[in-house]
Image 1: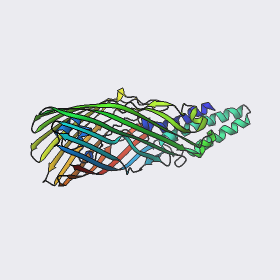
Image 2: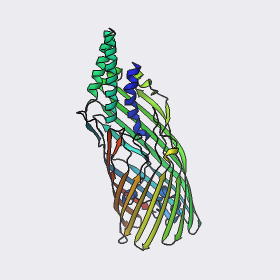
Image 3: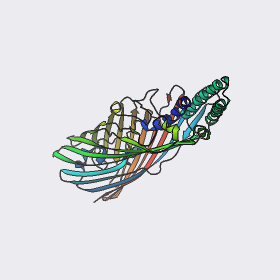
Image 4: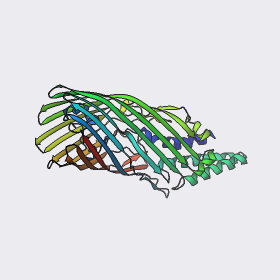
Length: 435
C-alpha cells in the first residue's frame, strides 16, 4: 500500500503545498504603488514608512495617517500538455476584495517616528474547482502504479488484493480528468513595522525599523477517489511568525536630486502544522500535527533616485534585488530552490494644480525561476507592468489616492509539460489625513 501512496498521494500532497514555497516579496504595500510603481525614493507621503524609511524625515512637520484598500482581479492557469485527450486548462479567478494597508508618521524637526501595517506576502486564496495539472498527473501516476499492482496480485492468485488495487486504479483514473477533484489553498502573511529616522545633517537622513510578520497557510484537496486511500479529504493549516529589521539612508544631493538606499533583512518564518485531516495517508509523509518547516521572505536591497527637472514634475527610478538563495523555501514535504531576482521601475508624478496631480509608471521584474522550480498553483513568472493614477487634495488635511495596475506575465513551461499563465489587474483607493 505504501508503494501506491508514494507514487500517487505524495505527489498530490506536495503539489498542494508547493504554492507556499514561492519567492513573492510584495511591493504593492500601499495604494500609492498602484499609482506609481517607483516607490524607493518616496519622501513626501507617509507610505515612505515602508518603502524609504529614511525619507520620513523629509516630510513636512505633522502627524500623518494613511489608510487604503486594494481590489485584485486575477486569473491563474496551468495547462497540462500531454498531446492526448486529457489536455485541459485549470483556472483560478478568485478575486481579492480586502487587501488593506495603514501607515502612520509623526514628523517634527529632524525626527520622524512611524508605523505600518500591510500584507507582506501572499494575500489571497486560490480555488481550483476542477483540480490542477500537477494533481492530475499525480493521480494518473498513482492509477498506473495501482493498476500494475492489481495485475501482479491477479497473477499470484490473490483475488482480494487484485480487486482492491483495481478499484483504486479505477478511482484515481476517474478523479484525474477535469471535474474529478478540487484544490483550495490560502496564504496570507500579515506584517507591520515600527521605527524612527533622524536627519543627521540638513541633507542626510538615516532610519531604522523593526518588523514583525505573521503568516498563515492552509490547503485542502478533495476527491471521492481518495476515499479508497482512506481519506476523501486531505487538508492542513499552518502558521508562523518572525522578527526582522530594516535600515535605510537618504541623501539629498541637490534640492532637485535625491538618492536612497534601503535594506530589508530576511523574515525567517517557521511554520507549525496543525488540524491535519487525512489520517494515515497524510501521516505517511510527515504531514502531521506539530510538523515544522520554513517559508521565508527573502532579504531585499532597494535603491531609489528622484529628480525634479521642473517644479510640477518629479521623475523617479527604483530598483530592488532579492536574495532568494539565502532564504529557505521549504514546504511540509520538501524544498524548492530559486535563484536571486530583481526588478526595476520608472515613474513620473506631475502636479497640475494644488488640488490634482497625476502619475504614470512602468516596471519589469525578472524572477529567479527554473524549469523545475515553480508553482503550478501560484505561478512565479517574469513580468512587465504599467500603473497610473491620481491624487486629489481638496484641503491641506486630506488627500485621496486612486491607482490602477496591470501586470503582463510571460508564460513559462514547468516540468516540461505544464504551461503556466497569470494575469493580474489591481485597483485601489487610499485616504491620507495630515494633522
